[in-house]
Length: 167
Image 1 (cartoon, rainbow, N blue to C red):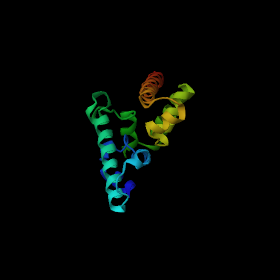
Image 2: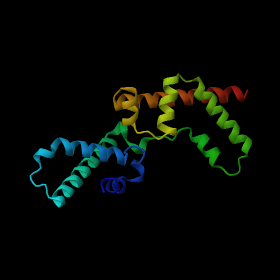
Image 3: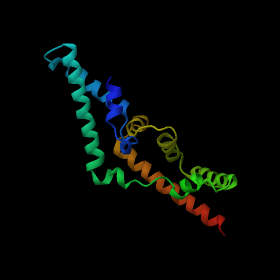
Image 4: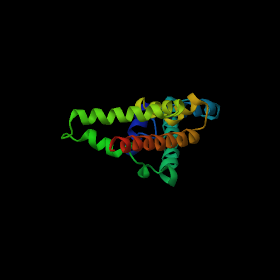
């Protein structure tokens, strides 16, 4: 029930930032910690208490991403917009796509292994920042910064490869 509610609450532009499962897990953890303060153990009361807690956690997450300028979802730039456009363009041939993918793979291989792993987890496996933070034993903000730095380095490496191939 909480999972469905969380999925319904999350707007499309925040789906890459807020994970419904993370919201439910956070809510259940808080509920477990606050269970003794609950006055009525009636199922209807518990249900509405959990729903309200989930909505509050959701609103906190929205404030975190929408109201903080440096985390503003609208400011995000897609990874390699030129590559995305070329891959989506139906007129571009298979060899062109293959060339772009090879360039992307070559650029990824030039990154330090930690940066490669962070990008793979985030963009290929769809892990949330929280999950990555747990895996690398760092804070979510540190993981966000590492992802941003990794993307910057990846874009630099791709630019270098494009410059060398156009000579």
